Image (cartoon, rainbow, N blue to C red):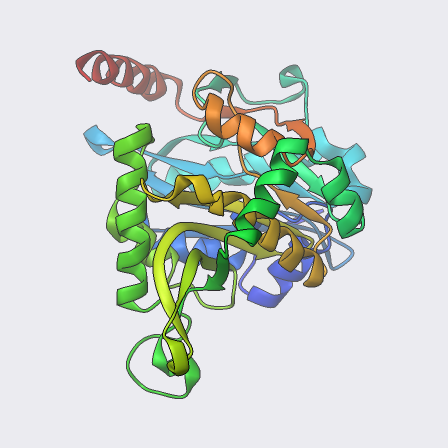
Length: 355
């Protein structure tokens, strides 16, 4: 085995896309997004006989007091046939990351393994920490027919989908920049400013109503400017008739951001208006995205996080679609500098007490 730096977009995405439940947080495009919002990105791979058998995208994050750490979201990713080498391979990764960490003044690696593993098998100190990505999710098997998917849903969920259809709710993708359609006004793939404003207004209303944590406006703008179709924004709305002039869009009442990568579509962020909640538009939006993912060849639809204590309503909503619940091991820190890591933990504790 040898460590390599991955510099080819197609090579990385082909490797990730070939793995079951393809992980978009390790994709080349998501790395580009992290470069915009965080800074430096390092993409490492493990090669055997010239083939990639594992990959890890590292995001360098800065902290106070001149300290830094690496974050590896939902990774490293190990080829299914090579997972029996898991501990050996991850130790191999960690040794290389420690070498890089010394140059980058990084004191620890924060990573999110995709499978359970015994901490004692590793040569570096590893500690469980507060989860970044939600560790429990619901995944829907898209190999089932549409009829079976509907049949498996909770009766109320199925009823709400049909109610939204009956009430005339429609779903559409957000308009993209003119350049993608042959113009020259903005970056290709970027959601138009007026479309983003519609989403942002809905998201702000949702946060004020439900108390969810909200990323900055710039964060969502940069996410929705990614090229390549990885991230998509969809709206739910009710058309209103103009008589002989046809139809035009009425009030937008819900929105969702989704990723499509490899064999998996992921529901990332959702928002809904305070009004017209009786139309059940979010239920129809999910159903249309499930059908879209299935038509695009995806095998799985990931509802991206449930938590009965923090989000009982959202968890109940997602469970209504009858997917399989799945638990990730969580988030762990690999310590490269014990003294500075201890100082970091003290600082973090003080900061949380102040907040």
